[in-house]
Length: 522
Ligand code: 3NM
Ligand code: MG
Image (cartoon, rainbow, N blue to C red; front, top):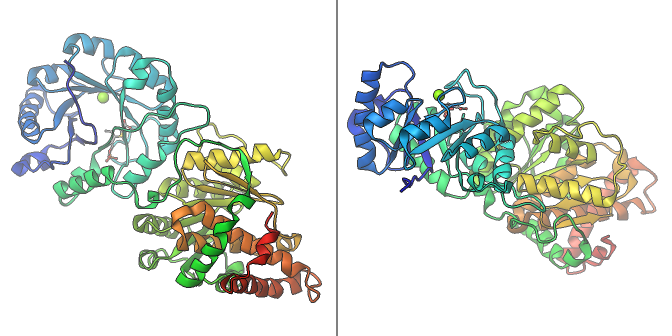
């Protein structure tokens, strides 16, 4: 009978000190891989025997890296082999059918070969660059991991569907939940991907001051849903990518606008200098409380007060990426919403790099951008790197709906593509919005202030982030329509103050129970 293995928290160990001293292996560790590239065979066997005893006491499985002979000598659960080690068939002949054989893979091709050869699990990596393994062959990130899991879930070979999976490389407490969550992204017309069975970790446990506590914490994190997923969209869209008219949803919009006014959420803007003033004024007009700060250090405190964050990438080239990463992680940790506004994301190499860094650093509840920006984000998270430099839209409404639905489905968040028609999707529900006015395109910061508005709305109504964003967009765009036709408005200059007034007035009408302006929603 094949050994049963619980892969949830898989500890790879170079130095055994941390485990052997005081036998303090965390009960959260479910698998230990003894990886020792330097000791002689006698030492390997002696250490492995001691480890095996500890593992048995703790109910963990012991695997040996590379060395089938050591695994046989010790009688432990099996081996883990790399692409340059003994082949799976030979290892299987030596170990027999009951033992566990794991293989390191970094591509769908390697995954298929290992599954065909009869591997029991795959160690998929390298997810993030890590000082622990400097000779790592390819950094595949969450996008590469997702591709392999989708491939396995959709392959007709039952070995692919039955194989277990862990990921490895740079996994730690700050990213483990995001990696697990975002690596599982069902796509239209496909079987669900395989779900990760566990995470493999070296330094986040072995290098911790208190390895046992670090392991306990990681184990809990792998079992808990991430804070930002508490109100996530349902998986496997029933009407995937089919645009639906927003009129069906309008009933809940006044409730959400009232909620923003009541809660007066803090709206934290990490944004361009040039738009700070108007963004702050728009936030006030819609009933939110603005704070403009590009310091990552105060993000955790702000997140704890119930704020929503908007990261506008326009300034990343000036202040550097680190404050954004710090803030993103702080908000993710508190389960508070983060909106990404990838301004000009495809325009230059530093911006593309910044986008990749941010996407790898955490979870965005909502990504908002124009068609080019959204296509860049789609390309940045995709190993196929497509569509980065597309020109003005020559795509049909259906094609654009599919793009936003695909990105939202992949990132498991909400995506808004702005333009003459806006497209809003959470992967399940996709809406087109035809409100707004050309004046919005003639003033600075209208895009950024829409990000501000949405962050405030999602902060006030996280129960349904798509609906919250929709309410924010309608208030924002219909107020612009009303302002544009006012008698005192002659052009973009007079438009701005009129628009601020109309944002305030539209909201006031809702509070007074007279939301007739919603009739203009299109
Ligand atoms: N194998 P840490 S990455 C042992 O990609 C190992 O195959 C890898 O260490 C692979 O958790 C790696 O400290 C080291 O980043 C992972
Ligand atoms: Mg090896």
